Image (cartoon, rainbow, N blue to C red; front, top):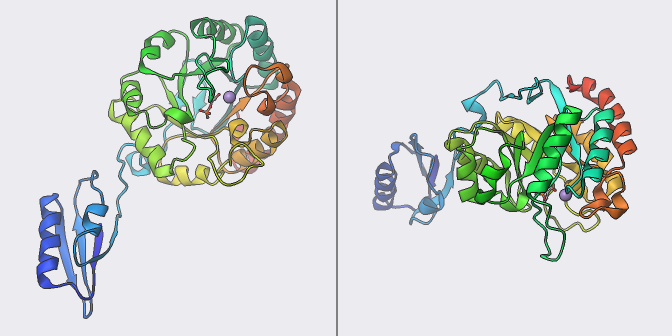
Length: 339
Ligand code: PEP
Ligand code: MN
């Protein structure tokens, strides 16, 4: 950390800041310039708040140099994390994985119809909400355990891995026998108790960025899971809230290369929640692969007009098939392949 003192800072104020830094566990190297004094503080501590220094008298500005996360940072595993599944599928390697399925599991017929179609298109993992975080308490809340059973059955039948959202700690145990990946939704990105508990689980977790979360906050949430011992974390950009109203959210494509720079964790893009409109999903999916996404999370429904949630952003199965043909052309242009 670099602390630049004001030109007018007194020796007493400088000594006070040095004392403060030493108390925090830093060793301090002082550079006394003609006009200004600059303090370089070096130490292993990551849990400090630069504002505590900024408010000290005589301090002009404070710059943090090291990231506030350790395990999620790129330097922890410079070569990158690859998450390996029992059927051989890998997320984070050279191959881009397409995860597809309905927003919510609605019925056996719906799920099996969609699962069959996405398999034909080439998707490798089936998504479907069993517990739904709905904005209105009167909207469809999900089929719960019945949905989990259907997901596993469809996954086994079509040789698809299964991902579903966990909304609270009490659901974890119930979900483990049925899912291959636990999804933490945007609304729960900073549910720290849930994240901590998922750190104890021996299954990968897909962590979505909150609607108003910075990338640093996303990485600190991943750190919660990793600090508990679960290093299999997959990050996901799913759109953030901006002033634009045309789309449901603004898909921050730049988050993909930024996360790849800051972290070794695989980065996924969700163009469905990222746009909220079916006709915008394919262009954003193509852009995500071009930008280096390791996986895509795409909502698909065989009859989206009758979907119980997120119909407007769900692709028809033939649209997914067409998109995947396009992705098979785009991926090689950036040195990748579609799994
Ligand atoms: C979902 O994947 O259906 C979902 C609710 O996502 P998000 O948490 O991104 O809104
Ligand atoms: Mn949805």
